[in-house]
Length: 52
Image (tube, rainbow, N blue to C red):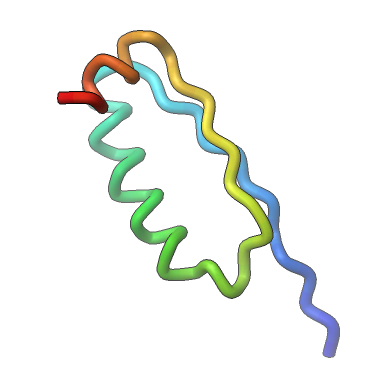
């Protein structure tokens, strides 16, 4: 059976978006055998929160 890997894009916005994105990215990491690539787009506010 041929299973193709998924391509996923995650968009992250302000403070609460960053928290939920971290949880999602951790989950995607655990599924790495089923995922080809993950792209991330972040707002400026999300970048600031992520650094902290």
